Image 1 (cartoon, rainbow, N blue to C red):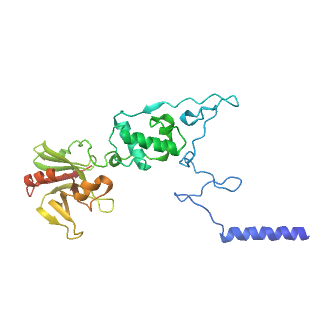
Image 2 (cartoon, rainbow, N blue to C red):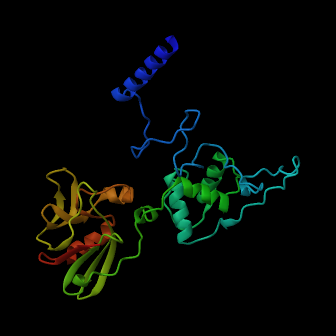
Image 3 (cartoon, rainbow, N blue to C red):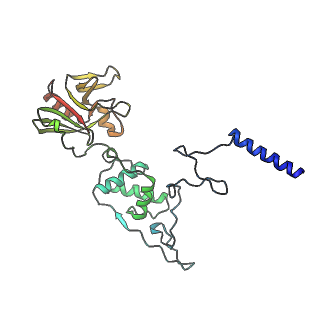
Length: 294
């Protein structure tokens, strides 16, 4: 009887704990509860296996661990030595693949300089540092094992990450830019074309507002020009300002010249090349069309 009463008491306490909701639940970055192992410890969430933990990646069954495998494998246990990983890119290579790899290295702070598309000495040093941190051979070459590890730790670079200081090829002009005098502004390529009757007179890199102060899209006209303008809201210089929508204007930005796309405007179309916008300011007239498009 005593045993039965004890069991009933324990069951009642367990039920009370469930009803009162007093248990704590760990959640991940997405607000979901992570899986729990049988021993009560947290298991890695899906997709997190192999993320940067400072340890070399485990070799798959069969003993082939790529460049991260031990060269001494096979000396004991009869296992074959690991085969070297295939080199994908190395010093001197050029192209868009190199630019993407550099952007990923920048995401994990091993490459501080912006992507250039050239596998140079700085890229070699960044790859060596990344490899050494993870127990991989410090070759400086991007081999298959290093590349897979880097991809798991980073996201696909956005356009602004590939060209953080500009230099993207200009997008095809919007059809609305093909007649008359037009400031043709592409948000896709982040470029401004100064066009007259369908002909591109000049082209320059531009920067836009953030998600909180977006640059408006559509067709506008230049209604006011101010060579030495200063913002009445933010009290910052806006040289060569050409206003087209309320307080939004095309103007020179020293911050854009210094920081590139690691910053943003308050809605204006920033130009970083002072010489180009000075020439543009001299040519644009009040009433000229402005087209901002994706």
